[in-house]
Image 1 (tube, rainbow, N blue to C red):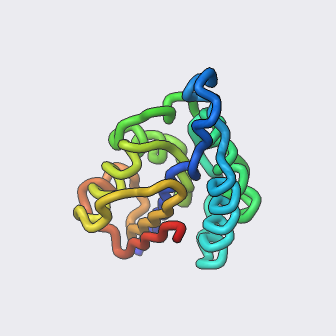
Image 2 (image 1 turned 90 degrees about the vertical axis):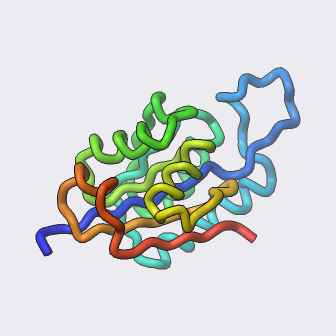
Length: 159
């Protein structure tokens, strides 16, 4: 084995729709989201996932979710505007372009569900809010991760 690539996909936690005057980008987490995000982040940390950093959409709900994961994983956050509403291909490209061998990506649906499904061979059918899917490849080149099956993947969602 020459190296390993680890990717965690995190769909942002549940957001608040209470203020219809807010732009979609500015919606905060609701009470459930504020409860689920730290719990799911602690769960990922407890499984030993150690990212170099957390890459997040700039939307308030994603940034807030990312902050909980960054805290639990002792990793810095990098914000990327292009992840807001990004399709699966862009989410994977952003992870690859990061240069990290282990990374958490926090973004939105439908891109997150599409990417999790693609990487799991359609075994992950839906990424509900604050779901976490991890993928590991015995590879050191991001260029091949979309062409080879991961050696392992996990899926967890708030209950």
